[in-house]
Image: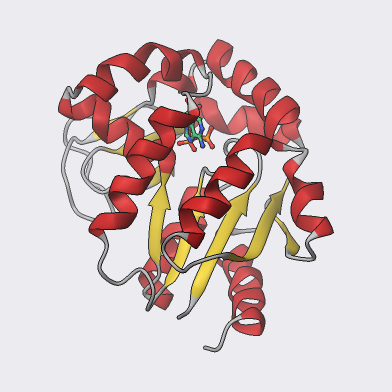
Length: 223
Ligand code: ADP
């Protein structure tokens, strides 16, 4: 068993980018709860319809909706106990910490490391104005001007697939930061008390952030 790593940090700090790099370079399983919920919306499922408005506003979906979706995903993955599993987006509240522990323990897993990506809010808010995602592979990019229909994704080659997330507008971004401060930031202490917390500077260049994270993972797990 390799074990489970949770990624903590404010919106826009690069959790998705770093988890994507770990998937690519360490063959990790990357589970992004935000991406799971966005694909429910995309598919037009009942869950997707019921969370669309909540997410667009920047609020949290209910624990039952979240864990229903997460548990389905965990149960579909046959390599869960053999690989490094990166949880990106959960837990986000104190109640989710204990529920996540139960959900993992029922599957013979537990959180072995919590990586906190650290950056000042003012630096992050500005990132959202230029943030575009690829509909096809989920990679996130920063473009000064809007990409046109001929623009290609440098990761997967998809053309004209860039979009801006519904919750990346200024109002929703500010609300997401307030939710982060009230609900999620206190979890840093929870994992610090468990002696599982490792902090990484989230403002450094993506490759350098990745090397710091890789070093902490190598130290914690048997790689
Ligand atoms: P970010 O970290 O940039 O805010 P995410 O993609 O992780 O973005 O999450 C987007 C949205 O998905 C959240 O604002 C929330 O509405 C929903 N969501 C994701 N994870 C959770 C969770 N653990 N609990 C409740 N809602 C969640």
